[in-house]
Amino acid sequence: MAEAQGSQAAVRTLKVTVGERTLPFQCFDTNLGRTVNGEILAGQIYRWPEGIPAPKVIVDVGANVGAAALYFALTFPEARVFAFEPAPECQPLLRANLKDLPRVKVEPYGLFDRDLKRRLFIGAQDAVTNSLGQSAYNTAQGPEVTLRHAAQALFDLKLNGMDCLKLDTEGSEVPILEALAPLLAETAVVFVEYHSEGDRRRIDLLLAGTHLLVGGRIMGPHRGELTYARRASYTDAKRRDRDLIRPPARASEG
Image 1 (spheres, helix red, strand yellow):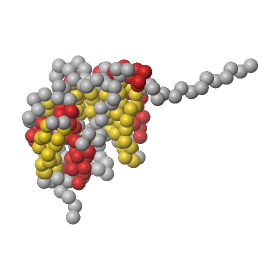
Image 2 (spheres, one colour; image 1 turned 90 degrees about the vertical axis):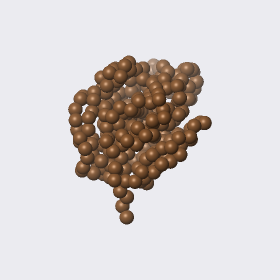
Image 3 (cartoon, one colour; image 1 turned 90 degrees about the horizontal axis):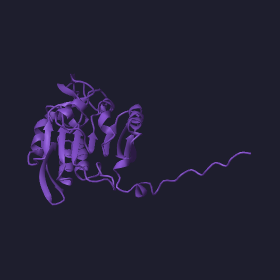
Image 4 (cartoon, helix red, strand yellow; image 1 turned 135 degrees about the horizontal axis):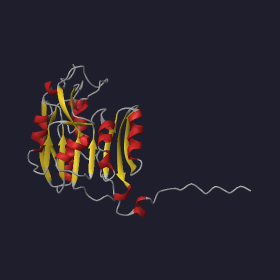
């Protein structure tokens, strides 16, 4: 029997413990939702790179029901977290999951490379695969949602920079990164999913000048999770590059 999808699915409440705090967490009661949210809350996906100072400002784009925002808020209790989520079905759970965390602010819209309204296609199994584009992971139905130019939205929130960007928007990562280009050079850590090989190459190019690829998980063709760390944010450059193997010098001819 197929599971109910999206807002039609039942809601399950889990107990989440990070450090000394235990909080309830609500997610849609689907196999995919329980798996993805469970991995995030267990610290298996957004692992902070060793040698980078703890973040003070975290921007979560594609917050869904709040697993990453909750994990970041509990792991870095002094940080401010801004969680962006356009899906109406996710917003009640997102707010409920973060209501006891005063340093977390929920923004009920998505980010993009311009201001517009666009249909958000609902995930076929769970809201974690909601997307502005269609694929095998979503349906042909969904609500119209509000999207804002990414950099302008942050400026309007009085954010002139961020220490951590988490970006998981099921295919809209590249235009958002391009819109955030003025801020990326000073962003210590970027957690980003990709959903096509072309997007992966473009993401690497956008960050190549300032960041190192320090972690990742490839789930299959056209789909993976990547972690980039800003070179200049490491507290010890020698330790950062201790495993670097430099090619041998070429012998001169003649």
